[in-house]
Length: 155
Image (cartoon, rainbow, N blue to C red; front, side, top):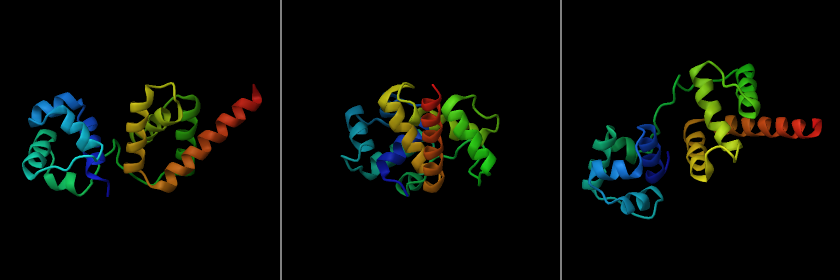
């Protein structure tokens, strides 16, 4: 279960909305929405309902900390799939399988500081943490780091 603000941010980005767009749709001032997503502000029942309606989810989904589904669904990845995703995060290209591709995209952003900046990396990290088992994320991060070390020694 995720904190409310993180869940809200995941659903907002999943729906492709900026904070300004969601704030407008839910009639919530954007600074308030920002504070809610950061966990610095509580929400009233009226605000909860407005946010949920704007995101097309039930209020319970947000309150219970349920993240949006990932493309291809979450399933146990084989060793070969884990290696494909780690290779993609290190040097591309992304796998064709939708589930592996979704995971690879998040991992690419998290492991490459040059791709999209700090906010995008934070959102990707949140997506990884919220959607995938911690053991899988840790394994993938170790494998990508090992590939980077190996590439550094080969140069």
